Structures are given as C-alpha cells and as structure tokens.
Figure 1 (cartoon, rainbow, N blue to C red):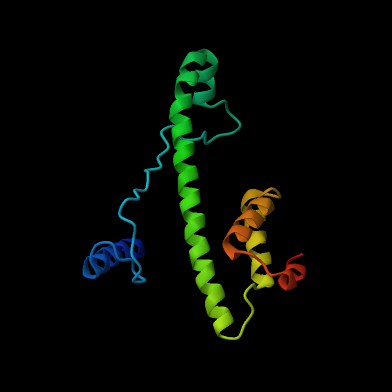
Figure 2: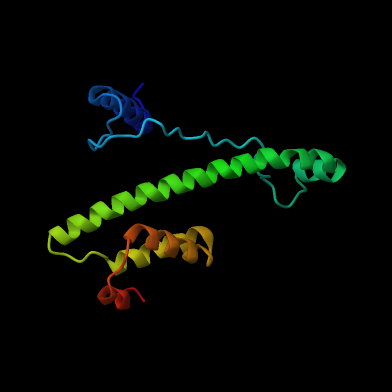
Length: 155
C-alpha cells in the first residue's frame, strides 16, 4: 500500500534530520536544544451539536464544583496554545525577514501591500472582523520597523 503524502513527508523529514545531524534545521541553521514544545492536547472536546445541550454543559449545571475543578487544566491548555502561537509568530517573523531581504536584493520593494491585504482577508475569513486586528498585529510584528516613506502605502 503506498504511503500517504503526510507519512512520506514525515519519514523524509526524519531521515533528512538524521543526515544533517542534531541541532541543524533543514535550512542549515542551528536549532536551540533547550526549547521543548509543550504538548497541546484537548481533554474535553467542544460540543459537536450546538442545538442540543452538551454533556459538559449539563454536567456543569448538575455539578458546578466539577466544572470549577477543570479551570486549572483548561488554563494550562490555553497557556500551551499561547506559547505555541508565540513560537509560530516568531518563526513567521524570521521567514518574513528573509523574504524582505531577498525581495530588496532582487530590486523589489520590502513590503508587498497586495499580499498583506490578502493575508488580512484570510484572517477575516477565519476569525471574523476581529481577525483583521489579529492579522494586523501579526503583520506589524513580522515586517519589522517601517520607514516613514513606506507608511503611507500601508494605510
């Protein structure tokens, strides 16, 4: 049976990582060995049927003390997700810096306004109107300081 693309990719990445040696990414940069990615797991899945009262909601209505006991666990999961988001944004910023450097070296502009608009549309589609604020914050963090001459194009 042929392997799926994801399985094949994982096997390839594992093999490639062994060939590169420990602490070296696919791009040849050093990987910090002291960082461990916390596992993000959801113990209580969200209710699937929004029209019927969920088991968790009815359990909470019957046993409010049980719901209160879950708060530390749920907060731990939220903290793990927040840490993951911060890591992903930092990685996005590094990649964005490389793209900007390559674009300028090739004679182009550092910031491509049309692409940023498409990115903001994706945030809006995924998260609603409030997603635009999230997208703007991510873009601001990732593009770095904007020279005064470029600020007008972004507004």
